[in-house]
Image (cartoon, rainbow, N blue to C red):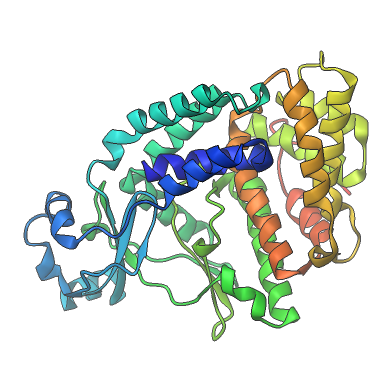
Length: 388
């Protein structure tokens, strides 16, 4: 049940972690942390099914003790055989193996968690738990399909092939299946350890993580939405940032992106009416909300736009955006008349992760320059572009 608890916990905490009782938060955390590494002997059948019984001959070595575990699988270090090295172009590999039965248990696990939360009567109505569960169900099924993840990894590799900063692992397609994913092993330091770097390096990391989020939305129209900081590895020797784990990748439609961009543009310009209008068009508001709800929503949108409103660099080490947004959430949960647009569950999870990473790094980021540069090249459905 760990994968379901992790996904649901992420989605609920994005709305407001403080609205969950300590008891519910503790239960979700306990379930998330309950699973240990699974011995390779228990995973052997899954790998045999995915890669064939002779799979070991395609590796020169395979470490049966995993070096990392995620919510639905664990990762082993391996070295490819000479023939596979020649074919794939790399030697050292990371092999992600899905826990047996995880994909088949998603629906029942989420049903059980939903029952637990409903019976507790501790979540406010404005959480719209049924919508959260529905989105979590779809995303978990996506993440359990390693062939889908392999396609997303390949797509990002193509999109970022000429990027000066970001690198994407190369895929070993012949050693991947719906439950096994083999890719190039990437060296680097997890972002949770990056706050010890110099201000210059922290600014560099924060700037490019923010740049990537904007590129994913308004250039690629395709985003890796998992906010886990361990999905970014900084290599201090090459100054490259490696991207990992593409299971939560998704596309966004032009109709949604057009309106979402206009919400952000209104926030950047401090235009309350534009924020209200495009939020209604997007589906955040119905137009029939109480004034206190409309005001709280627009206030929170303007707060999110604050880094993009600042000229020059925005200092995330001296910010109050997160606390100001958090203070508006209880009002919105009490007075909200409609759930947020489905796309924003994953999108805001990623954006909040980027903001929190910049805050952790105390990074100084030229957010407005990045926003204007990337969004000025975005083409709306009617062929128009923004001018600043």
